[in-house]
Image 1 (cartoon, rainbow, N blue to C red):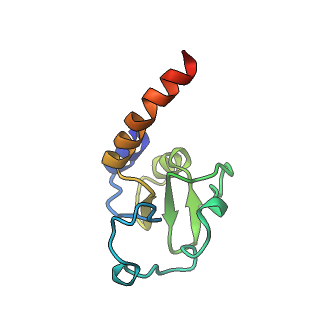
Image 2 (cartoon, helix red, strand yellow):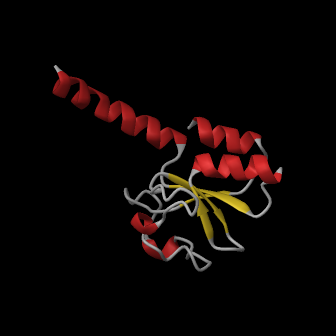
Image 3 (tube, rainbow, N blue to C red):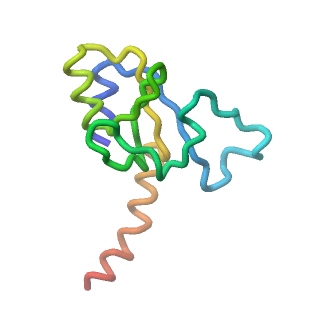
Length: 114
């Protein structure tokens, strides 16, 4: 979450959610169809082009060059190029969903440790 916030503070304006797991986005026919070459890839195949980190929860894509960055490498890219132009944040879960997931699994993790 911290890295997402840092990217937004650096000027990243474009973002979109990908992958619907809970059906809360409505029927499939009402969802927007993905555009671009990289979107049809399975999320398990999306790796950072710099460090090869698997980008399951979040990634930054440079749509013009079909490049995927993990958030850490995206921060380095923005720092080096001093611009977020052409970059887009892609996330599987928004902040509310991540918070809900983490609190839902906390009691299970605590019980497993006890």
